[in-house]
Image (cartoon, rainbow, N blue to C red; front, side, top):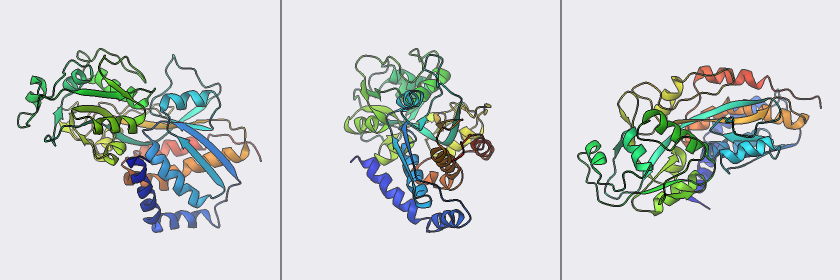
Length: 354
């Protein structure tokens, strides 16, 4: 069992114990006035970025609705979007929207935002506890144009750091990934002249770089490789004990990944009518520039009454008590304006009569 999962299990227990207040409140809200749901099983798959939050939310929701079973496999955003289209799952997690080249869902569906969080630039460089990286320098590192840690560009941004001549090993996702999509979107947007590899859930990485599956896979590879560097979601990076760089934002400030910076980025993002939004490279001195959104995909018209009622209840739980749990597993809750719109969208899910 990987360390991040062990840590999250501990956080789940903490989240369930902490709300002796939280869950007592939820339980009292659920009984006797709230309707207890009929037995239903909801199977989900997708984003590893949202996995830590989903684990806690699912476990806590089970305490309120014990007749509902919810599963979630973190096989990457691309897998989640594909499984959703194919009817393999009842719901899916993704950090990237469907592109025009993706197979499209056969029926109308919703993007439900859940939380936001930073994507870290994590590195393994003993003796270098702090590092600052501009977008240009980050782009050149991941494009394999900067190949050693004592490169002039890195030295210029870190004049007081004792940078070794260690070779840089770039670690990236090998699966179709929303984390990759958002990280490469940042590079393309903030360093267009330095980053020429494009953006998307998959890109053609330079020879000599290493691929790993899932955020946890990248985290492990970086942790096991001296000189390694990779992009990893904040929750997995912290769970794995990784060191991560402060990244220069659009205001010229070097900001370490944190929940305050993620919230600031989300707060300034424009919300589209379908509740998609882009907090990448957002304006503001406090904004962390590589902040990722993440969504749950749900079909508007549900075909099973019990499953439909369960998915609506789960979403409503995420938008109430779930938001209070987000920080316990290193995610930032949604801005109030977006949260209000998300709650309203839940009401648009159509559930057949039982």
